Length: 113
Image (cartoon, rainbow, N blue to C red; front, top):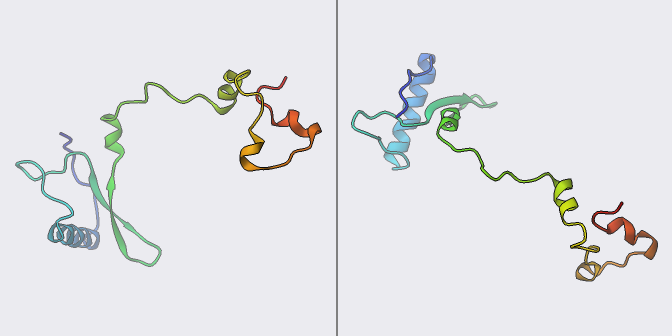
């Protein structure tokens, strides 16, 4: 459970945040969590838009401490194409029904050297 003090906000921002939170409680979009009613991971913050209205957002940076990194990252595009050398001779032009000049077919091959 993540316990941290609230961010320092102005009185106007706090009132607007309380109004947003109470409105979300009334619509049953959010609920209180735990026995002491604290937020587990997200910290609510208000962001002022260009029109001067406030928007309630969740600050999810603390969530990065709980998420696991990807164990199998994707390869870069060029290395994926290089690993498929010999598997694909050229793109299937019949699928898209595109006519290609014979001189340009070598530009459409995978793994050209």
